[in-house]
Image (cartoon, rainbow, N blue to C red; front, top):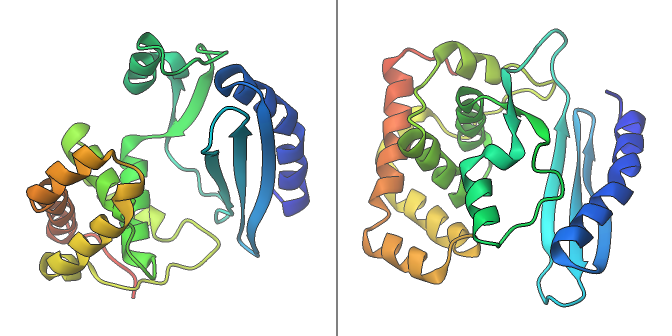
Length: 224
């Protein structure tokens, strides 16, 4: 999809996103801000500022151009039937106007391959990527799919430009801990962060290092 079409699509859904935000968070204002434009992709930030809350609710929307003929693995999911969503609805912390909406999402194996590429390619590490790997591996039991990972490293129009190799993660414990410490505090409650810190972040590190060990053992080819 070309950039003008993406911009029209986002503009077309802006009013409905604002209405749905009001239904959950109460009266407020939605702003949509372009966060970057490249030949191979675009990004926007959607921020909803409720009148009765100090914090804003923000979502980043990113679109990346795929190589011609590439199709990523997806599956349909009913929004209201997802465990985390159902729990929040039951406890009254979340109200969703359309709980029976069917979302087309990447499969867990495809999501794991996203994390592999991000961890190899980002100029700086994000603690949330490490957390996501832990959740996918330990919470959902997602194994490495060699074909899916290798496809992910070549599927986008933007070329894969690795900043680190899989073997680096086996000896980078200090850097990984620093990335977790600097990033996850914005997403996890203080008491959860304190417990994870007390444990030396070992569950996260074990999951991440196990992932890259499995990548090496399965013979995944990482382009230079």
